[in-house]
Length: 215
Ligand SMILES: Cc1cc2nc3c(=O)[nH]c(=O)nc-3n(C[C@H](O)[C@H](O)[C@H](O)COP(=O)(O)O)c2cc1C
Image 1 (spheres, rainbow, N blue to C red):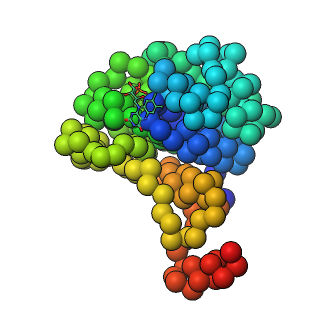
Image 2 (cartoon, helix red, strand yellow; image 1 turned 90 degrees about the vertical axis):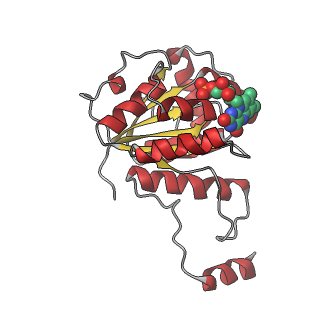
């Protein structure tokens, strides 16, 4: 089992709020401490995709957020931070964390991180991970990709980030949308250094045949 750690999760305005929900749930349920930051657009997409209307007031949003994550009793381990709060602990390299994921990561946030434009807390905390050589996982969701997106992904990878597109695999015979979400969430957790049952190892074709015969 992974030692208990501290992780930052940035949630931005790309499609894919359920990925963030699953990762937050897994981190909190396994006892990790989490700082979560949601961009203004991240809140909009959360409303569109999950019907959760947050206000941007981090104190007022904590309980609805915990409810959404499905961990109502994890309030002592989850801190919500405002996206403009660049004085938050995770904005400084002197504050130890085990890493950060930006999930989902919009093209805009990807571009700002890749180019060191740290105007808000999400970009600043990501910048801190890069300069401190900590784990940074970016989960972009866009299609098709422009040359600008591709160049920004290359720049982020060259600077040390893991670019992990939200592209679920179908070779584990998924039955539900949540199964697909889990394939991406499990990979993100793995790259954060967190062991999780969501990461299903490929055991060869035998496994697929078995799953299909049981379906
Ligand atoms: C419903 C909805 C879905 C969106 N999906 C995406 C997406 O998948 N990828 C993306 O890069 N931007 C997407 N956007 C646009 C971003 O939210 C927008 O560019 C925003 O400025 C990003 O801001 P942020 O990086 O501060 O979160 C979407 C917007 C909305 C309202």
